[in-house]
Amino acid sequence: MKSIATSALFVILCLACMLPVVNPPIALAAGIVFAQFFQHPFQQKTQLGINWLLKISVIGLGFGMNIDKALAAGKDGFVFTLLSITLTIGLGIAIGKLFKIDQKIAKLISSGTAICGGSAIAAISPIIKADAKQISIAIGSVFLLNSIALFLFPVLGHYFNMSQHQFGIWSAIAIHDTSSVVGAAQVYGNEALEIATTVKLARALWILPVSVLFALSSHTELKKIKVPYFIGLFILAVLANTYIPNIEVVAPNIVWISKMGLTLVLFLIGSTLNYRSFMKVGIKPVILAIFIWIFISIVSLIGVLQLIN
Image (cartoon, rainbow, N blue to C red; front, side, top):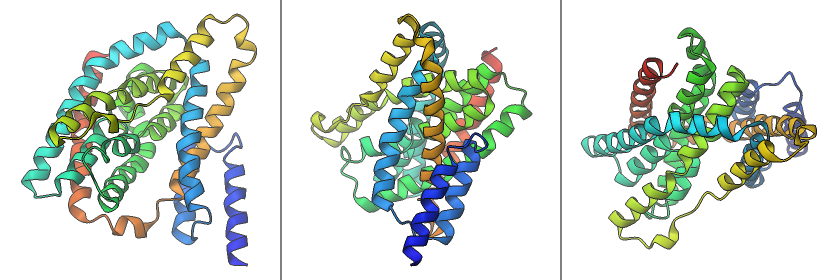
């Protein structure tokens, strides 16, 4: 009976996330609260749903963007992306060695922080031959900070009086996972959402060169590298929205559905984050994740405020 009741409550909360009054932070908070009090009724299906729904929803957001604006945002974010990825991964690995943290865990956390959270960890883990425990520790550390960022960054953006453009670039650089980047930017404004999504997906492409470097250093076959194909579909959606006549008839509806999908994704992510999973992580990896996240957040904030109008 308890299992049926829990399953029903989970489904009801999923449906509630599609209501206009539920924004990404509320959805994530609801998922986290659910995870603390109930055993997850659909653990494996939820992980699969997060993976596919996130990709489909991000592709859908492309129908709300113009190629010229997307290219301009990508250009502004390129230098920040290159410098931040290099600094974050280098610093993370160095600190990991200094404090004698498992090097595979240090590489996974650094890559997840530098590029795109869980997607980067999933791509790098087979290359460096990380085991399930090392992967779960890295993902747990990164998603803990992801959750904090979703609530904290919009507040900081307003505190520093950041423009939509500035916040879009900053959130794409300093927040780990695509879902939380989009969630925070969606709260901040539509322009911030467009810029953040574009810069974050351009950033995700850096999985490829970073994977190659790890493969060469680990003497791993290059065929194990995973290519983020859905980014190509996002680009096609942007091109379609820019050049296909009369697409504005359906495009706003696609974007609206995609935003609902991303809100649901954040609830699903929250529903997997219970205190028991974080207790298994250990203090050293969390300290490493916090340190390099604060470092890249502050450095990128200063850079964006000084260099981006």
